[in-house]
Image (cartoon, rainbow, N blue to C red):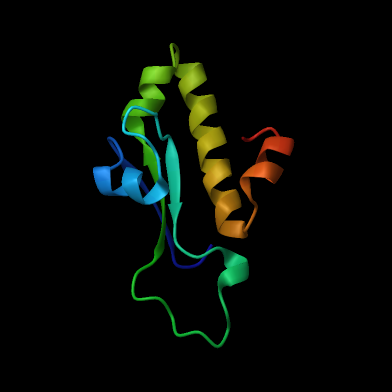
Length: 99
């Protein structure tokens, strides 16, 4: 995954929630911000900023009761967001058990 940053933030910003169409009270666990791999072109100029996978710590911690649950939810969230980078949509992720 060239030119992709994985970062952890406490919570998504209000701007992120608005951009994604998420209500402020609905937990957002992760977010892929950028163009998916199929959208990238050899002929396109390189982006000014790297694509970013955000993992949101507080919502993940709030939904999990044990460290094991937290580890599993982090894994699911990272795989989910990497799948978006690869161009896999929500419907297919649900079919694969990552919805």
